[in-house]
Image (cartoon, rainbow, N blue to C red):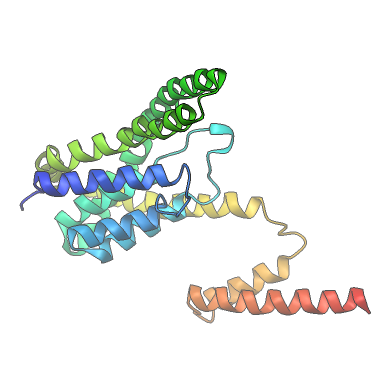
Amino acid sequence: MEGYGIGMALILAVWSYIAIVTTLGPGLWWGEALICGAVTGLLVGNVQVGLQIGATLTLMSLGMWTYGGATMPDFMTGAILGTAFGALKGGSGALEAGLAVAVPASILMTQLDVLGRAVTTVFIHGADRALERGDIKGITRWHLLGQIPWGLTRAIPVFLAVWLGAGPVQNFINVMPEWFMKGMTVTGMVLPALGFALLMNMLPIKKYWPFLVLGFLLFAYLKVPVTGIALAGVAIGTLYMSLKGAELNG
């Protein structure tokens, strides 16, 4: 089973750079695990694996965010690497193989996330000095340069892992014991449940519990797809707000 060449490693490195940098400004959602997985899957020729890896990591990230600058697992980079190596595995074991790389990579990347945040302070101080001089162009230049260390904290690991690590990582995946692969599958199931729990903890469940029960009935007993439940929720929520508004106006 062949790995990737330097060309694909460079392409994925550039993609990881763009994805993380856009989260700092334009906010195009390119840094989301699902988007990163899908785009990576398109680049490596296996969109299905990319969607599976990205969706799983997105569920893991529910209820998590970098409030106050706190560091969370880097599911974006995990989705890119997990999709790349999962696509190499292929077949029925692609998802498990991808998660076996994606989950540890997401956690390990928190250290580089801290490094990226720390290094960017250098550029902020440069912008402060430009402000003291009244140099508006200098302020803009320093802020634009501040993206470089942030982007490189993702681009360099992705490049090295995909190019130099493709063979060793794939060999590692091939010799991994069955219990470890099953463990990654269980982890992929437990962490999304934890994400949902964190999300539900922030919602007014006690006040609107009938909607929760209705959604559970639709999914567990009537086997309605998630998209159908979401559309039903939008319709019922809109109707509820309309009736409530009419009651208040009446």
